[in-house]
Image (tube, rainbow, N blue to C red):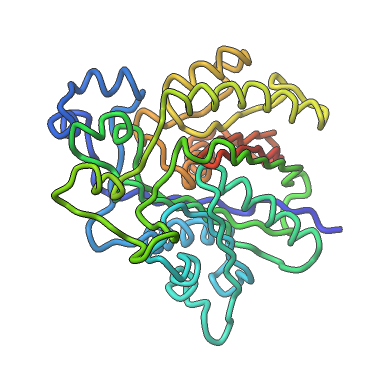
Length: 336
């Protein structure tokens, strides 16, 4: 049976850097307060007129180049995105066309909406497809642009500071170094907490499905992300602290035997708490301070940055662990 492994990584960040000073003026708080609450100093916002597939395209091209192949060598795309380009179709179809993989190749596109956990869900699917022999090389992409749904008024101070835009990608295949492998992934969900972190701009129970009055503060709240941080973050911390050791133990490892741990960049408080509880200070690689939480894109961006920085090298044991809206969570253990 072929062993799935990561052949190349890539990322793309929009050039616009948004500082806490800029947000503070809009949110009616201080820059110091934003950093203290969120752990974020800067984040990236996409330019008007840019779509998720534009960001995904650049990350994909970087990953494909790093893998030493051409776009036409890709025979499946699995893309994780919270926000689409339009209500439908999915981002993957737009990306496929921009990569030149529509006619005559007609490369299939699979799209996942599992928010922060989307990239881990996508890796789990990719591993199965490669090891079944269904596909030879799969492009796995995480992309998100939450900036378009952030409230830049004082009402948004509990949500807006945390998030930024970006895209990350990997190529998964079976060739290359025999020591490398996607070892195992595990994914979970608990819909009891779906209301903690949501967007209800589109509500299929009503007609028209989008009902917004820009002059009504309550009605236009649907334009923006709803985020109950006071309940969500403790749940995230508790779940990750419980999940990570159990997941590793089930596969013969402990946090101490993993070379590098990449955690979903939820908040400074969550990262600090998980690191402290598990005793993994010095084993994680983070970018929250620079980029905020890029949702589906966070883990592949982290992976690419860590590889570029020399924190992850071929043969290293790496854990990706995530928690997000839904709520959804999971992890991937891999030998890079």
